Structures are given as structure tokens and as C-alpha cells.
Image (cartoon, rainbow, N blue to C red; front, side):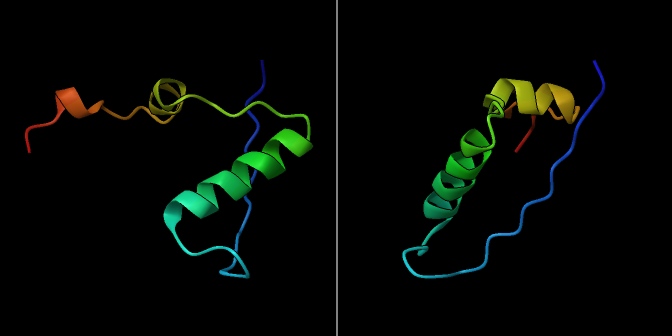
Length: 57
């Protein structure tokens, strides 16, 4: 399956006051485009990131 990357910029606008608000807005936009939002585990795997239990800080 080909990899698809979507860059979406969310400016601070009415109602966007926190990171959680930005995440909720992006999730809504992605789902409105009929795309599926990756779970945290899927995102870590795709980006080759360690989980919180694998870092030493």
C-alpha cells in the first residue's frame, strides 16, 4: 500500500485554545475527508518512534 502524507496547518482561530482543541479539529477534518486517523501505536510504528516505555527519561 503506498504511503500517503497529508500536511494540514491549523491556525489559532475562534475556539482553538489548546493542543487538544487542535487535535480534535484535525481529527474532524481528516474524518470529513473519509480518511482514517492513526492510533498512537500506528503513528509510532509509521514514524519509527519508541513508545514511552522504551525511553530513559
